[in-house]
Length: 263
Image 1: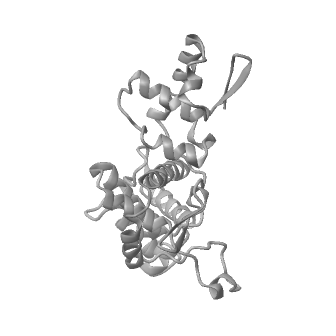
Image 2 (image 1 turned 45 degrees about the horizontal axis):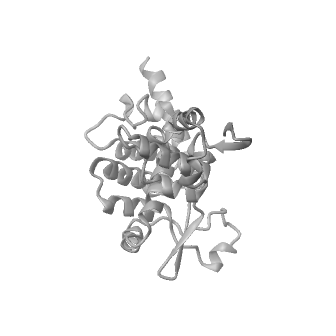
Image 3 (image 1 turned 90 degrees about the vertical axis):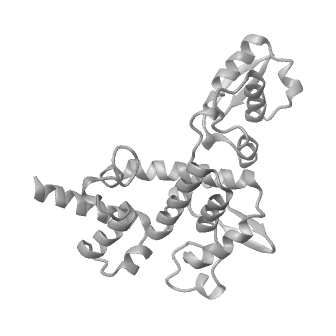
């Protein structure tokens, strides 16, 4: 948190999205990634970050206000995060639950489909891809029998199913767009974190573009085939259902072994 004394009052100014509340993130979603925001827009962001009214800004001296404005410019640049800010939401009497922080409880195929939808939304801005992203990550709870089973893994969400996610996506259309954008920034932050943990897999640019994965197929398709062929999981279905971090760790070892053999 950025600290600043204004008229004998200590103001706490978040310096990244991880320090913001869900309500702040929803309000900030209207201003993310605005190119060259004007002065008024910047002050609106300051008010949101400080949880104060626009009227209170008038009581702040120009020098302090300018300092607050400068400390808030990160909102227009880098605003992704990895913390689970949105635990769940309800639509049509159905509750959808979030994945874990940093996507620790996601399957490999779930991450792949979420990344594909996020990339499509970033390129086109079409709402249907954002709905599909949310529907991939947020799912209804498992049955009571599954939650009480001896092999329960702590993930309350139903197992990922591509065809069910398409049905969920139609329901997600009614979700507040601000919340959808919060999910998008959450996934972007998680993807960045994961890419940094596995540079051998994702390369310097954060994409699955390693030389070992170059092929006419998409990088993710090649990665799945490589894990099924060279890994210990066996068939493709087991690869897809494997925990994301376990799959990437195995893929990393395979890539390093290939590099060693080729050196």
